[in-house]
Amino acid sequence: MADKDRGTMRDEDYVIVRRFHSDIIRELDSRSILDRLFSSFLFDSDDLDQVRSEHDKNGRRAGSQKIMEILYHSGADAFPKFLECLRKAGYAQLVRRLEEGIQEANKERSLSE
Image (cartoon, rainbow, N blue to C red; front, side, top):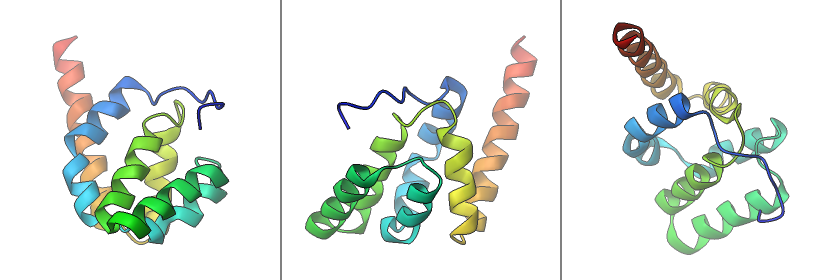
């Protein structure tokens, strides 16, 4: 991953992901979403290997943590693509909470402007 320069996710997306980080880690099974992350061009084969290795060595939560670590550095469009991958993988409730968090953050931002 060191030779890739995808950049970081947008600041406003990062805030949402941080706010819901523990929910994501608790609910996400890293194995259930890897293929979708790969096919959406968020992750490459090196990323898949890193997540699988972490999952195999240290368990589901560690694999999910590795996904989030990589996701933070997967470019400006990482979060919308991640939401779509979650949706397709059957994480409807988690997606709903994240989208509600986006709406809440947007309201907060508009009130402060």
